[in-house]
Image (tube, rainbow, N blue to C red; front, side):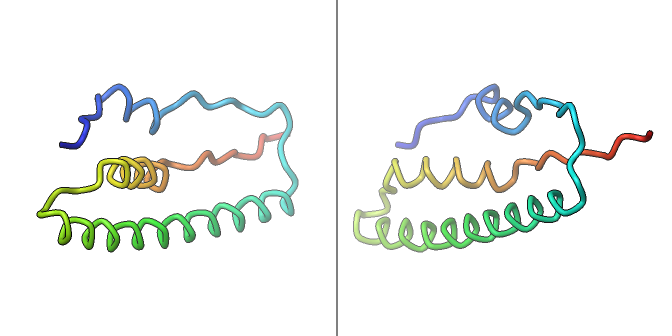
Amino acid sequence: MMPSYDDDKVSGRLHGEQVEPEKTDSMFERLIYMVLIAIMISLAQTVLGAMTVIQFIVMLVNNKQPNERLAEFGTDLGIWIARPRVTRQPQAT
């Protein structure tokens, strides 16, 4: 049986505290951040897809019983992928 997640726990992961920076980043730094985040999300989606296939195989072998640790990891990773990324708007001078 999989553990149930509280709405507060999921909400905290999705809408956690966001700290505003004191200075804005240069355009080059923003580009680097965007590329790094795109790579991380792509890798996370690949891992999530692989974990889905592995969980399916585990369930075939274990009489439709999912691996709880694998299911929890998949849920956490899915929440991380779905979480909105922080976008910092340049401040008007």
